[in-house]
Image (cartoon, rainbow, N blue to C red):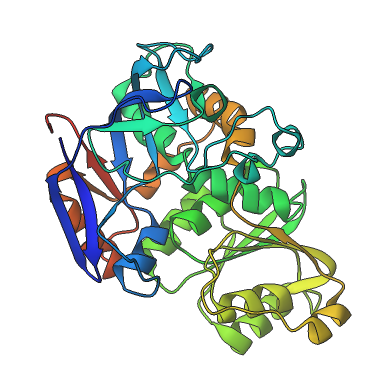
Length: 342
């Protein structure tokens, strides 16, 4: 089997790898119907997050179950399934509180940019659809594995309510799907912070009512101006840098909420300053498994179409171009089709 391996900064190869097999009785093997490149994959791709050895890549996936271990009870061969980027048993005390991405048995997925994938803790990680979805729904179902689930959690963590004013920091796939999530949750005003025309257009399609192109102090001032000096009720931080976090906190009204899901890189928090903001701060790796059943239903019922974030589709063996296009911001998100790949 061939799959994606990152060797170092901007060195992505599609090469021969050992095919996955059942290692534990709670595992499943799936045939990947679609995979993709994530914005967080760009951190190691750019060398900002160093890797120590050649690393199989990919953590977003959906597909058809090929084989299950002897202890798997609810997942069956032939089912179409979506799974989280973080595995979970969905039975431990942490999972029962809805934070499956901090499960006591958690593993972070990798190696999904390949034709086949081993999924640990299959019963707790995978959610099957009621039947085989049509081909046109697969991109949207794929987003639920991470970016849509993460955007949804950002809005949930930011306490988005009907009638609220929401600001979204970041115009990558997660930020754009944060806009969609806020709209679905009933936000009345959604301010998307973006400098890119194609992303602004998609943000509008997803429900943004205002676009702010300024950043830093100017961006904060613009949001304050739009909210009559008060700040947004809820802010979704979807980048993970010091500037984006500072911008998010300072754009929030006193007593408001920041949901932060951007993986932090070089970001820190000055508690002395934060103390006086009265801002609620909540986030982390999204508990996608908590939200999967609801999001699957929204997609299958035609209520949301998050697959619109894919603006580049490639065969899996051209994965390196997907990384380049996203790195150079020629694409928002690259969809990878493993069909025909061995």
